[in-house]
Amino acid sequence: MVEDTNRSLLTKEAAALSPATRVKYYDIVIDHGNGATITDADGKTYIDLLASASSTNTGHAHPHIVAAITKQAQKLIQYTPAYFANEPAAKLAPRLAALAPISGPVKLAWGNSGSDANDAIIKFARAYTNRQYVVSFTGAYHGSTYGSLTTSAVSLNMSRKIGPLLPGVVKVPYPDPWQRLANESEDAFVDRLFRAFKQPFETYLPAEEVAVILIEPIQGDGGIVKAPTSYLKKVYDFAHEHGILFAVDEVNQGLGRTGKWWSIENFEGLEPDLMSVGKSLASGLPLSVVMGKAPIMDALGSPAHTFTAAGNPVTTAAALATLDVIENEHLIERSALLGQRAQAFFENEQKQFAFIGDVRMYGLNGGIDIVDPITGLSDATATTKLIYRVFELGAIIISLRGNVLRFQPPLVITEDELTQAFSILHQAFTELAAGTL
Ligand code: PLP
Image (cartoon, rainbow, N blue to C red; front, side, top):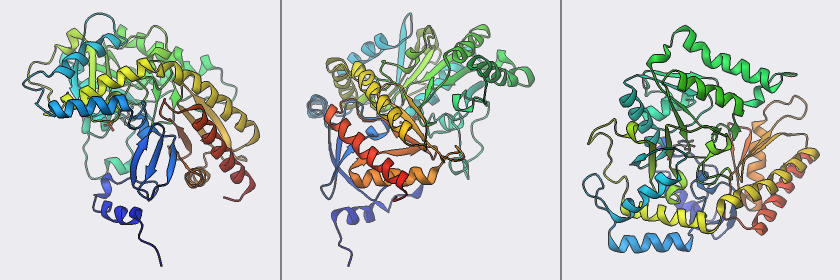
């Protein structure tokens, strides 16, 4: 007889959700979290190597953030910022503007999700430039609303039954270094991909009608993939030459994830006109922001981009506390340092296991490709076996694009927890190699 644990009862209740919103890995119901661990409804604790999809960089239930949320909730949970200012939002705005890697006066607009922040980029860019087209990249994920979805690498599952998507979005190939041909130098690769970037502009897309180029400088859901610096510089120069705005999506890779405040800071000398931030901004509470050069952000009048709860006092109080934790606990330096440790671990595993095809680590933020050792091709089946075994052994990791292990622990993970996670991963790799998975 199957025992009805808390877990199975709750997962039956969760089945009332529409399948469109139900993407589940394991039949667990998460009950609580603490730092870099989560505990399910049956009391089993796991090391979290996912940080709620990079939305809890400060870990779970951080006391400083919990206290800030509680204190604010006791004072004022909501009064719509669309009509009246509130104290935490008023304090957060200049603090964020000062952190933005944008010179000159910066203004910002609140949102509730990374998706709507990317839609906002499209709106502000179109309004400011009075141009229509938007260029984005293959492999990107910018979100689930119409604008952000259209600029993403849309799968059939995401676009079926809902088309047409937003008109005027053109996709160009993202320079995934994995696609470098045998014997192709980095320069030759960059030249080839930049020619592919320019191809639409030379055939059907008038550059003077393009409002914005939107890019994840390091793709998150695309597999933790970093564009070559020289490629991004060429795109950046092209944008400037043609009066096209350069916008970066920092929703996944911002706020310390890459060992810098912003992922664009991994590329010297590139300054965005607009940027979107979300996920970890309020440690996972629904708050996002689009920031940009003041004249661009002034291009839309009032009210043109507003949501009832965006910039809500509880979420902005959580964001202020999140920034405190990132600064006071030196999480950016910590991400860089622990990222080096993780890189050394995975590279060492790669020497032992031929199915580890590639290790990419930027801060505590990695994509590890699992491939067939004979053909070198993606092996999604082996990846699924690995992540399930890791789960059984007490850690949570998931895959990206089928065969990439997504390694994004909370940045507060302890050295001991990291060691424990490595030993779990090593055991799963060993079992896969032995054919016992
Ligand atoms: N942009 C990037 C780079 C993301 O990774 C995501 C979510 O995974 C989004 C935007 C969308 O954010 P949200 O799910 O909060 O709408």
